[in-house]
Image 1 (cartoon, one colour):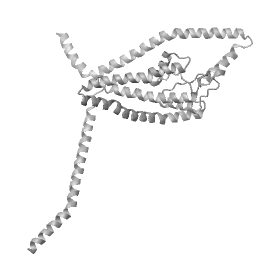
Image 2: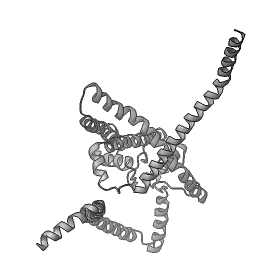
Image 3: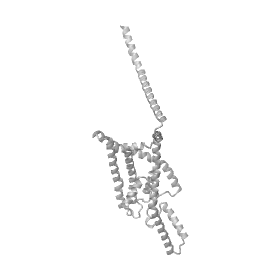
Image 4: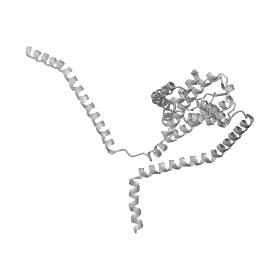
Length: 336
């Protein structure tokens, strides 16, 4: 008896706060996924980091033994300076001395990574003036880029998604949900081929020290705007036509980002995903709905007032003509 009463009292409570419960499960699920990623990355990468540290320590001891005139302190100072320069994209290796980081095409590539928030981190401003300009340039450029991408994606989605779905739905009578799902899958497959698999194969050929997995990894990390910076194309010492290559990569990143956003927009418009997203949203505040109703009523009243004012204006314009007709009619009847 008590158990049935408790269950009957809990059900309305859960239903009343269903959105909060679902959102709570979403937060817990995201935190668990975050912890899961940390555990996997730590278990996979920590042993490799330990081996790398041991190899570096052995190499350092062997170098000091072979060069007894060099003290460990001076070696530490030299390595610190080298690593500091490397963090700014400058290398002391003789085979990379011809690669400038701030020629026009490299600067254009850097600007595209800043505005798209990819940010590989392999090249950074060296001077205080460059850092200050990067701040101002980003504050203006990132919202400008979002506006640009939104406008471009909206126009492309109209021709690539909305019109084909509407055509097959109205012309052939297929279900709109089925057509939308099939279209999204086809568009996703084409985008994966054109902007992931084919470019990965090209990069694996042009970048001599990259295999296909590393090339595909670079494409995904770049177009998803993660931009870890561990793989950056065009930085090899024997890279031919480096300026043209950098410009092509810049175009690829911009076009690939647009394609990714078009695919995401297409999938987000699927009815199933819309229903799924609504589970985690908060219901609209009643006052907001009342405000929309008041605004609608105000617009309707203003439009009616405008129509009434227009009718009165028309009547005023027609009054002289009507009065003249009445006067002429009265004069004619008087003469008769």
